[in-house]
Image (tube, rainbow, N blue to C red; front, top):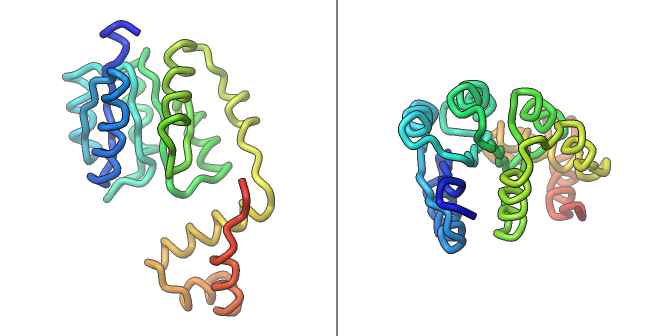
Length: 182
C-alpha cells in the first residue's frame, strides 16, 4: 500500500478507544489522526484529506450519522466506516444509504477492522445491498440490541429499563446475563 492510501481519520469521543485503534493501525503503516467531535472532524478532514474515515455513530452531543453526508461531500473518494456499540439493522441501512461504505459493531478486533479497511480500500464499488445482506441477526440478537439501546437511554438503570420494556426487573437481569451468540 502506498503512502497516499494510508491516511486515516478516527472520529471518536472515547479517547481510550481512539488511542487503542490508533496504536493498532499504526503498526500496519496507517497514519492516524483523531477528532473527538463533528466540527473538529470536518476541519481535520478538510485539512488532512484522509483516504479512510472511522466514524463513531454516537458522539457526545451528536450522531455520527449526521456527519456522513458532509464527510462524503468533502472526501468523495474516501472510505467511511461507521463504528457503533449499538448495532442494529435500521442504523446499518441508514448509514449505508447516507454514504457509509461499511458498518462495524464495537468492540471490533484488529483483524476485522483491517479486513474492512483493506476491503474498502481495494474496491470503491462496494455495493450497499451486499453489506446489508451480510448483517443477518437472530431474534435473540435483535432483542439484545434493543435492550442495550433502552438500557443506555436510561443511563444503565435496570428498573427504569424494565418498566419501559414492560418486563419484570429480574427477567431483564437474566436476559442481560445471557448475551446471544453471533
